[in-house]
Length: 81
Image 1 (cartoon, rainbow, N blue to C red):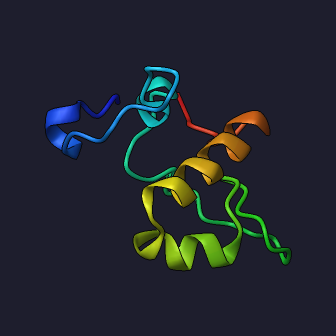
Image 2: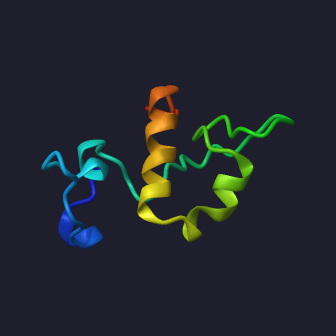
């Protein structure tokens, strides 16, 4: 589901003229409710580290965008359906 600027609150565009967070078509959280780390530090559902999951609400937009870029490049989140 794509979050609109009105829902998120307008944010300044990047120097390229695009708002990077919106160009990724991301939701507020990468969580897909398939929380499993299988004894390592990476969630099998969303691709975030345990620390990223625990601190997600405290990350600023730039930090969240960096996480989104990394997990998208790695093929996450693993959405069912």
